Length: 112
Image 1 (tube, rainbow, N blue to C red):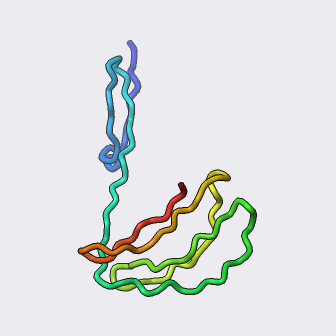
Image 2 (tube, rainbow, N blue to C red):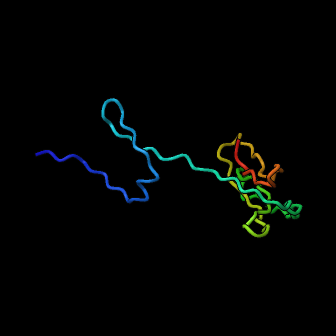
């Protein structure tokens, strides 16, 4: 008697994954693409705060300035920090607030 392998997932894990069966009968578990929800804020964010930029820990570190974050009721300041470059030629695309007809919305910074 041959037993086939059985994969058990919690109900929550099962809802967040998709299974694909290939033509040869193989099963691949595929993680979902994250859903990005844009939050619009009616009030304009305050001007950025001045931050004294400390010396970098190494030449591979890049300073990411602080920013205002909306917490659902008010803007709160998130201090700047250093991030390690993912590769030497990587350039940081700054995060920022942008205006839309529905209000202000946050655009996350990222490496390019």
